[in-house]
Length: 285
Image 1 (tube, helix red, strand yellow):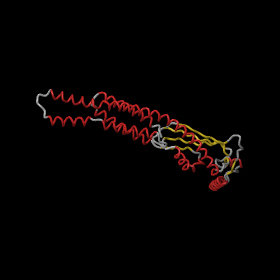
Image 2 (cartoon, one colour):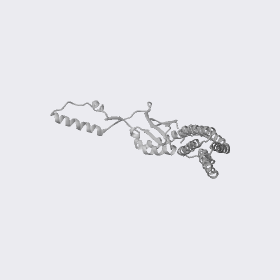
Image 3 (cartoon, one colour):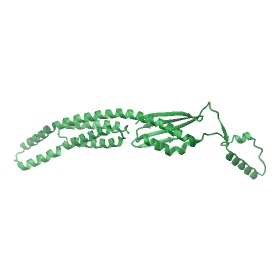
Image 4 (tube, helix red, strand yellow):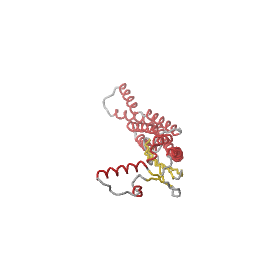
């Protein structure tokens, strides 16, 4: 589900901030953007995010900025400087004569020779993970509030589905009786006298073929399970996805078996409600 959360803190002259954006996704998909010096934390970061989120695409960004009021320290990379001098000596040897003297300032301008001193990254790691925990707590809270609202909307549609199911169940005896009368009326137009035993068998077969009681019972069972799932504390998105698929299958069968316009209309209304719930369930973890 969609959400945004962040947390920031000043640590050792640096301003660190976590930004987490969440959008709908069928599975958990984490996209990390970390400063190079903290890439060693990627595995632990993914583990901790997985504890708080089970579904959705999460864009997670760690921003590191030097505090302007903090004193800036500089470090000389001796190894880079040594390699630079060795390379310069090789060039002079190939040329056969000195190329000229280098001043200290010119050497210091070479990329990588002089750099800002870094705070010990191992020392910062637990503090950054703690800050990530704060951001994740905020994200989980936002997602929980949204999930609660979606749960109420889905629950309301489940109750609406029950109304349509109850209406169809109430009309079943009337529909079956009407179907029987319609068949008898058509047979009455036939001059040949039908075999009564065979006729009764055919009527029973037709009644069974057009009977939608089982589909209605299964729809009611799926609705009950959906409402039960919404009350659970653990992630329910995938289970709800499955239940919606089963509901849609029963609603389609109800429409294909329909013997009157009211049952057909109820089937359409059920499928509309199911599709609305399917869209909402994509936002539920």
